[in-house]
Length: 482
Image (cartoon, rainbow, N blue to C red; front, side, top):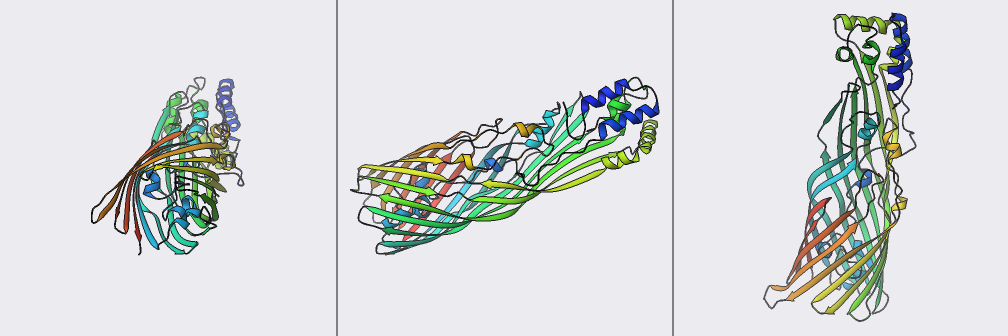
């Protein structure tokens, strides 16, 4: 049971062997405090404990696509095709603009690696699995599309994440070592960007398309851990052989604090592409395939490790402690120390290859299926704890996964003067475990439901997504010019 500020077992063993003399007490003091923290390698991953599980939305951005559980690759017949499958833009034969509004309620579980470190000392370091909760409203997508005979272009804006949340401060007391652990976490992150798409209809059955998008990440994450009575001087001075006071008495008068603050604060950008093909031979079925490159970001951070040692009181025990500390000023000075190490965190969105099939048994019924090969193996590893223990053994090997998305749509044609079509949709899809920690299982099943209506030249769609991680309402409006 060790740590890199100190070795608790050595401390207690040294105290038991020490005779009743001030000189041996100083010797007992020197042993446990001589070690220095082993800080994270500045070249390694560092930063947000939640970076591996950031709820970045990788679904097609429209409410119609969400109502179909994202199974839109072989459909792709509206402005959101720029993200879903750019080849589908050739289906559009009129200029159109679209606006999409999203409300998201997040409940994101993550591993607090500082708490994991603290628990590895044998004390109650707090909850290893914590949750960020937030609700946000934003414009998730906006676009303009212009067809030119067999060639179509589109420009768009998309937002994939907007979250700001903090965990309640958690305090745990370890009566065995008289240590108090305090930790909390904060996360603010946004992912958005602008893109251009172009599609070309090769013939009546086959279209191809390309999207190029500049994606931006802006993130600030703060993870804090404080351990009171960290170096366990109360075990040395409070040994019954000394007869000066109990362990708790010395813990009350000595301010012996170790703190770690891991901060990630910055932004980065990456240019990525989507390349798609759409095959529609007879209108009864269609096939789509798209490769989506995932963005990769590197953001700077700092880890600050602070140790503080003092005995501010004026009672007899405080006076005794200060007398002992005066005999070893170099050691005491080393424990009143702050080390700041620049570090960095890599955050990635996995590449994915999607194959889609859409079946139309009738003019009013659509069945849609997407299979996604998600390249989780290329994601960066989550960071280890700043103290270097619990999280170092917490990693799990990620493997590439195949995920399915299934959706169904039923259209009800209407003969009203204004309302022409009413539509009902539903679907389901699953996300595999992708957080990188053995302690956390992020498998999640998502259920979706949607409604749609066409009011002359205006298409309005509403969708709802329900899962353990996020509940989303999405409202889309698409206006087609004559």
